[in-house]
Image 1 (cartoon, rainbow, N blue to C red):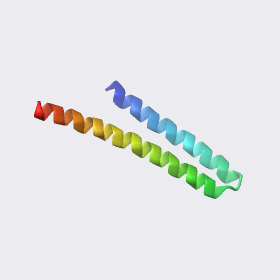
Image 2 (cartoon, one colour):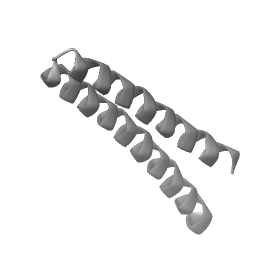
Image 3 (tube, rainbow, N blue to C red):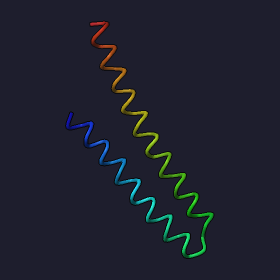
Image 4 (cartoon, helix red, strand yellow):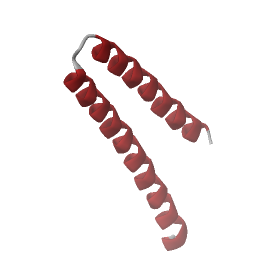
Length: 66
């Protein structure tokens, strides 16, 4: 349960940092770079989620296949 909360906090932290970077870059007039930064943040979060799902499926496989 502790690991699940840690992953949620990591995702929330990445979201907050990306939102700040996006806002700062957009105010500077660099909207293309701001969108690119948002895309990079989304990809990082997606990789974290896929890694977590992979671990979940490994645990399920170990339960049912002994």
